[in-house]
Amino acid sequence: MAMELLQRHGQVFSGRTVPHAMDVGGFSKFSMSFGPPGKEWRNKRKMCKEILFSERCLEGSEALRQEMLQKLVDHVGSHCDRRDVVNIHDVVFMANLNLLLTTFFSITSPDTAMELMKMMEDFFSLFAPNIADYFPILKRLDPQGIKRKAELSLGKLLAKFRDFLNHRLDCKPYFNFNDFDNEI
Image (cartoon, rainbow, N blue to C red; front, side, top):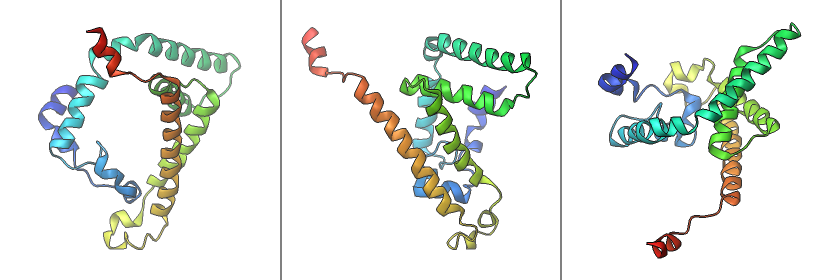
C-alpha cells in the first residue's frame, strides 16, 4: 500500500511548506523532503529507489543491520536486567545513527555518535512552533531568533559531516581509472 501511494501520489509529498528553520542556506531547495516537484526531485527519488534502497544494497548491509539490532537488544536487555528505565527514543535513534555512521563513513565510535546525536537534537529542537511559519511577513524579522540559531546549528552539523567525509576519503584509497583502463 505504501509503495502504491508513493508511486501514484508521490508528488503530493513534494513541495511541502518549508519551516522557517529549514530555510537556512537554501537547504530546503536541495532537500528531498521539502524540495519543489520537478525533474530534479524525481531524479533524487529514482536514485534512492534504484541505488540506496535497492534490493542488492539492502542485502549487502543485512549483516551490519543484524549486528546493530543485536546490540540494541543486548542494550535494552541489560537495562531490563537492572530494572532501569529505558528511553526507547534515544536508544533507537542511537542505533539508527550508529548504523548510518558505520555504513556511510565507517565510524564506530560511541563518543562520535553521542556528539552527533547531541548536535542533531539541538538542530531538531528548532522545529518547535515558530511564529514566522504562521505569519510569513515576520520571516525577515525572525522574532524568535530561530533562523539565526538554525544557521549556527546546521553549520556545526555540516562541518561535522564534512569531517566524516574527509576522514573517509583519507582512509579509502582513491580509485584510479587509468589502472582500470590498463587491465582491459
